[in-house]
Image 1 (tube, rainbow, N blue to C red):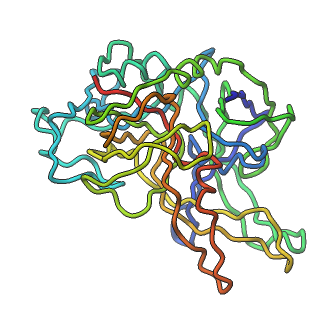
Image 2: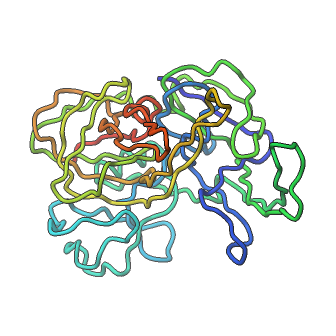
Amino acid sequence: MKFYKIKPFDTVVFGENKSSVAGDDHEKGSKFPPEIMKLFNLGKVKFFGIFPIYGENVLLSAPADLLGKRKSKGGPYHIPKVNGISKNSIVDFETDLGVGSLPWVDAFEELEKVNGYVDVKGFRSIMDGRLDYVNVFSESDLFERELRIGISLDFSTGTVQESMLYAHFHLRVKEGFLIALNGEIKELIKTIGGERKVSRIEEKENGLGLKGLMDDKIRLEKDKRYKFYLTTHAFLNGNLKPGSEITIGSALDNSSDGIRMRVEWVYSAGAEWISGVEKEVEKNGELRKKPSVYMLKPATVMVLTPKDDGGEIYRLAQIKDPVNFDIGSPEGRKIDKNRFIERGWGSGIIWEIK
């Protein structure tokens, strides 16, 4: 596992995955963290996450089970107690936690999920349920948004398209961001993002403290509860339901081996459509298209229970269930079921609930 700091020389574009239509939004936004696919041009490596940097600290998106008082900043913060969760229902990917589903909260309507980022020390505190070292950083601490005007290009002719101006928010990253991966990036200067912004790449041996977090080992024991925090987007076959099962294994290999775990609850950070094309040109000169898939966003937290004792694994884990769908094409093409595992989709950090 290696870590690289990326610092764009200018702004960077990590665009939202939605189409613009007349009469809709007048500008397109940018998001962070982006899906790992936005960095696939860095090489055939396995990505474990994209994390902003503040000073000499690496930050993680605040876990979706971290709650704060609505429209307030700086706490106090709350974490739901797992034993207080109703087993009758499970949250939908994009809905808020339902009123009454957390009976331990007296004034639930005053709480909402915290948006922002926490450092490694704060992340450990949240996952341990202590909340004694939590300092939430806002997006404004890390980025500046700049609205820029662009024009659509016709790549087949190399000319601009008439009357196709668009407005797009760019991100000016103040300190850069860190990527964790399995593999190696050899070039020190690369282009990244939607408009191929030139960026400097620098290896960081300990990942600004992230390596120690991911290198920890954890023992999975039957019927104990664990949290699984997503660091990359994840696609799951079918809908999550109480009692449904997923396979969790080490993220450092590409096998589908792991331990079956029962889903008890999901604290959702939301979901979005992810789409793109593979850059392999076939004999007829056409690009192989990938389907759009609906994926859970990073910072989603799952509460899981192993069905059997699983021994020790690194905290850096991955959902190992193979993706199961076909590409809708006359040729009946299929995506390799292990492709998502090999590129790092569904990676995360697993933690015991104390």
